Length: 208
Image (cartoon, rainbow, N blue to C red; front, side):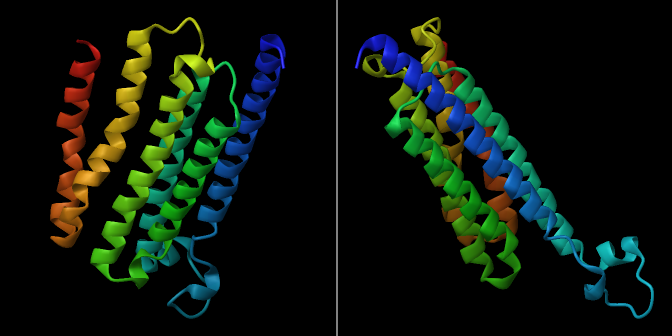
């Protein structure tokens, strides 16, 4: 297959991959909305007030908020990384689909977090975030390798490195939060602040 034909096919694959990921994120939003409490779940008798229903099931609302936050953040991250590409191929597509799968796994953990042991829930969330981040960072690492020509040719080597290091910020942070998952909710939540020094260090590395 000629280089021109490979580029054309790769560009078509990239558009299809973007459409696929957008559809998955859209479906995820619909599924998350389904987590909202139904009127028949009200703890009160008689006519149901929506505000009262939501207060009775505040935990559900928190899960919906967290899930929507993850969906928006990862959708933005996915769009940003794909925006740097000219095309894709089978291996890069596999990385992208794996990332979407791990995001759905993360949503599963968020949804049923109240029904499992707290330590297990926190640890699994950290692991899911590690896997999600590694899939995204791995896809970019593969795409930017010169021999595959998937990245916009106008990007400089320094810009490619900056994107790569930024992509690794999240999985590195999630990996470091894993031990704190067994130290309690407060310790685990505070451990996510490690993203600040990690991000600063990686940005400094990118600017060297």
